[in-house]
Figure 1 (cartoon, rainbow, N blue to C red):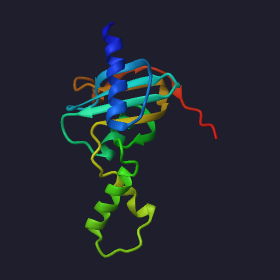
Figure 2 (figure 1 turned 30 degrees about the horizontal axis):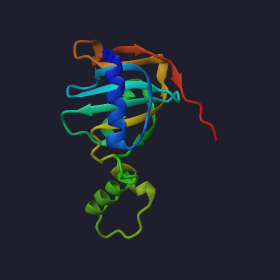
Figure 3 (figure 1 turned 90 degrees about the horizontal axis):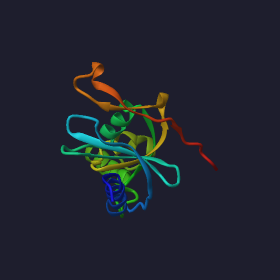
Length: 162
């Protein structure tokens, strides 16, 4: 077995153990690319032709950090997978943080929680990608102009069905 096969198996195992999401990796587009000074991301395609990104960092990340990283990488996120066994993870943390700020409010709407959901700790992160803008996936490079350079060229746009 070569290194690429081990990398694919590692991604499949992590997705199953930490997110409860079984995947079969078809190919790795970008492996362990720097996306900040402390975070690395892997972008891969599953056998079901879904583009996904796995992100891990040595420092704490919150959902809004992950959203910003995805945007700077030149991609659009469709779904942020919650940790295994916690399907309402982002909503629960958003409600808790909202109640810390506004303890007297009784009626809480989704619009009220939108910002507070982004404060949920999210490291590691597994994200379903809907689109790669301009066919280029960027990675962090402190020496490059603007701190980002092209890490891989890959065109992808998910077509939603029903």
